[in-house]
Length: 495
Ligand SMILES: Cc1ncc(COP(=O)(O)O)c(C=O)c1O
Image (tube, rainbow, N blue to C red):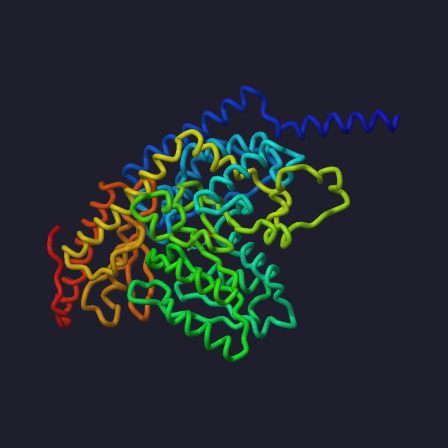
């Protein structure tokens, strides 16, 4: 009797639980609705603004309930209150921060990866999924010029990739309680703040952190770095780590990698290059030479979700000597004994994650389907568009930063010593929202940033951007004059 009750109970639970396994007809309905939604969204990008404020009404009042919801209603909310609120990161008019990508073929790969849910942490579990990840890693290591002793791992982004590199550096140089207070890290103020977080999370905050000044092109000043290294050695300190950036977030500048590599060798430090934004520009003939020396770095970070146009959640860290990575992260567990002893390097030995998304597929599938050539063409186009934007902005009358190393241009209304007009200008740009720009403060000067990174940014979007900055810039000057303020002697002219 008790047995029968149990069987009845199981049948009832199975019936309820099967809601999670839609049948073929239901699957077709759901995928049709989702794919139609994605299609319409992508088609809308041709005219959609880069930024819109949006309101979260239905979304905020929608509760997670015990009972099923409606796909139609949920897609409606997604459309109105998610995909049309805030920065449109899939848009070619997103030119702020470092825009993300969003290749359709990568979305298909994510759908497939989530459907099969291959476990890509250990080769025994899914040799094919791990081979796909490792193929992507080998393609990346060959791109930067690393040899066969190198390896790396795919991460959720540049911040986690930087964190993994910091830990590998710390462990390789045996930084511990006995030597940490004498150990010195060198980086420029232009380095990404994720490195400061990584230094904190790896317990390296107690080291001495030297901020190396920048030259007139916003690149690390190598003479200053050399002098600091020398002074520190004379003072009995121990240089441990030099961090350079190949494509800074603020201005896209590439630090002089080859010279820094030589100093790293001379002073026996770990050399890390954060190429999260810049790294993939190595694919182009135009700027490949600017990365000379990157292959001498001990670790390199690159973000496929930046300049390889993949969706967010795609980063990578590469390490020249794979043992430095494996020794830092490899751990064994008794319950995984039967999964060890296979030939491939397990991704779970190369970073903190055990269970992990099968993220290799979202990079591998687009590279296989499209080939590398269109990625290269897109990156060359971004460099040329950025140079074009800078020239045209100068012609209109804007002050600009130096010729960009890559595809970030900084510009501002001229003659504005206290930044007040540029503050208003930025606010008005955001209020308009057609093209989205961000800003940065360099040595007390507010600059507007135009980051040409999206594979959907072409000449049309750049012309729209130029028209917009001219119109809004002009109205800021005119409003000031009408309010009776002193004219600072600047005007913008028609494009
Ligand atoms: C140079 C650089 N490094 C690291 C990062 C952090 O990358 P993520 O946002 O993928 O964590 C960024 C982000 O913009 C960056 O520009």
